[in-house]
Picture 1 (cartoon, rainbow, N blue to C red):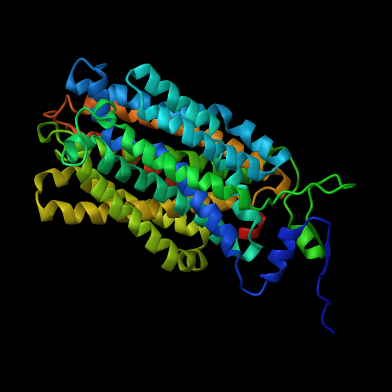
Picture 2: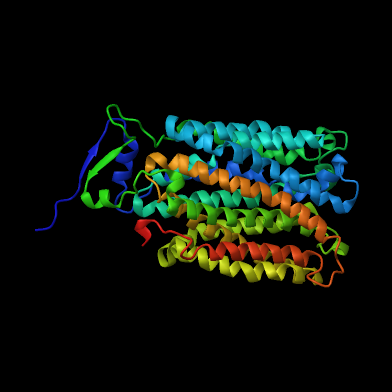
Length: 469
């Protein structure tokens, strides 16, 4: 005789688990996943939206004495957001474990509305730094939403849940610069629509910030319908929504040890941080490189040109998420897909400095293809390492675990734009060096970082959670 099916015991208030149980036979909680994707997208938009106009903003703020020094100041402005997020992420993760995911997510979206708008009104360098820092410190979104995306899915659907966060976040990180590129300096780009004496003439970088803040306002209102996934039940020591009487499931549940001693978690976080450092440095360098003058090894693009390239790259992420990622995860799994994506990124980055010899369609087509592939590979890596992190801990530790991951990742991302800006500024002054002149050195260092991340995905460094063995 076969074994009887696992008995499912529900506790009062566990509507989420009841809905997940009804979706056991291949169904999905489409509304919840849509909320996850939209809120992740809205929170990610302001992170990199400044990069296409950052070069021009630093110039207009009159803090750089020479054109070659703009990258130095741009790096610190780009890093201020990540420093703020790094200092506060563990706090927000713990709060999300105590009061729930929904309040932290809603507050984070609200902080985008306020401080992203104030950043667009900045007329001094210190004001731009301060508003970006506060935007990062009060946007505690990433830790709870990753936990939320796991908890809203059944175990067999968790790869899809976390990939929606990664893809929506990645699209926001890429579409953000596209918005910045198209809408910054509207008086200069669209003189027939915007007058020089209008508010957008006085604040040339306000329009993209207002556009993002308006979208975030709509998302903030929709948070009222966002269901909570973390429930505290009376008489229980742990936050439990459903108990399945199944010894097989209990045997595979990760032990509740100290998070810092959980090597499967910490090894995946370290790998995640290396890739995050690389991706953030890549986004800033790509934007600075494309708009810098050709005499300094750049492409002499306008911010609008950069926006067009990044729009194409963002569109490729949506297509990849809808039609390809589930097959990639099912075929290769999170570890192999991370390794393959990392390895394939290296030749793409190596090709960038040689594109300065091209022009017209011979430049635009390969540049767009390279940007598309690089974005797809980056999202695959981030999703794979995020899955490893979230499956290395039980539910009641996920918020704190993702808080630790976000803090570590934010600190690495804080170093990335500052370091990238300094290195980019230094590289522009050595155009005639014998060893990797100009921007060739910048892209070489990017590839070395990618290679380190790839090495860290192998044993003995990476400890794999039990369910992936």
